[in-house]
Length: 420
Length: 84
Image (cartoon, rainbow over all chains, first blue to last red; front, top):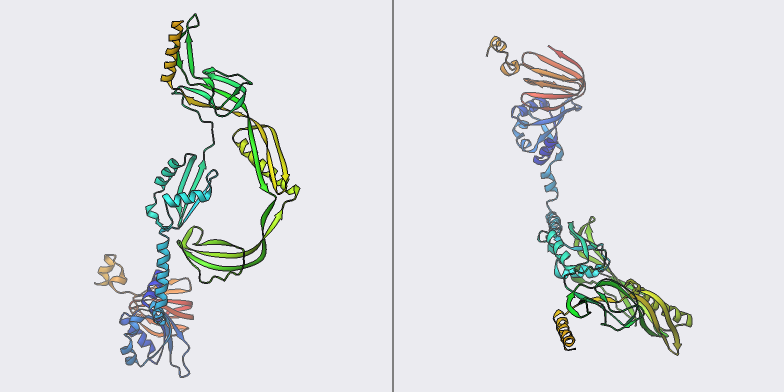
């Protein structure tokens, strides 16, 4: 194979020689060290003249003239092989070759950059939000691959997004793949190094109080306002005569559940504008290179109301070699605006749907719904939904103790006791 | 170098004396080293002049795969090889 490649590189021809001294001619060729191969004897001519076919290198072919004259042999080229003949055949196609080379060079150069960022595994953060954040602050499309340090990027993103448990970045083709795995939400455990009270986060009626550390101040069925102390982190040390001796401060800990009432109110119009698509549409295409969009032709829009929906398809070679060029297919869809009035059933359905969403959001915050006293009223053109929702939820939150203030109160108190 | 000396030193005679070597592979390939010249050649018969003899190879569809100044390879269906 290597020999055949070499022979194709230097070029060779298959020739037919005929003449009475054809054999002598071949012998003379070998004497002059001309390399000849695949020699076959063809049928002699009608006059009995021997005819031979063989392959000979082009450089040797140019040197056989004197031997042909000497032996009176005729030669005819049957086939030509080699790169030189191909180049000669396409000598008027240099620009085509140049264009092909330039195209491949451009494609190769474009594969040195990152053109697409793919984010997966997220849930709390949306895909588009993450991609936008990454493109604005870390890696943009068009960055050289060698300038992207995946390890550094992983570290930076892990610090930036505290909900990320694990992150992996890698580059395949021209695509940067970032996979997030978010942490499982666990109850925050505060480090008990600073004394604090447990105070009410909102107005509530205490349902249950379980104290693990500190002094409970409230009891079940007691009404509390926002900010009231529920479990105190101040421990009073009393003497045998129940006199205040000293104060000790601890990190108050416990579970306080309260019944909270939420005022729910919602309203919407019974008539609304509804888009009805007529089915009439016009399409046009555009090409975007990086952030530049070229629209060769955009049809004139004669519709009064319309939407434009654009679908972007990034060009790629294979699965991951994205190019910085995308083809956009846009569709102009006509619609008419109709005034639609909800029926009573539809209005109730809509109101309930919105209320259900609100309750679902509450439940996600560990709120248990006890009662739902929400009513739906339709008054003319307006549908109002109002009422109260009674819920059971944890209402205690830690609050730092101002130790100096407490001690000052203690001193005042002991002074009063002494005065008494 | 004389024949006896070469023989005594066990040196290869094709190198020292230029003896013709004919290697036959099955029935399809004959390699001849150190030949002098081709006397005649056609599809069914090739006559080669060796060191001090003439060898005639007869067969069918005989062709010379390659040949240089001193060696050649003949391919085709070989029926007969005669020395004279």
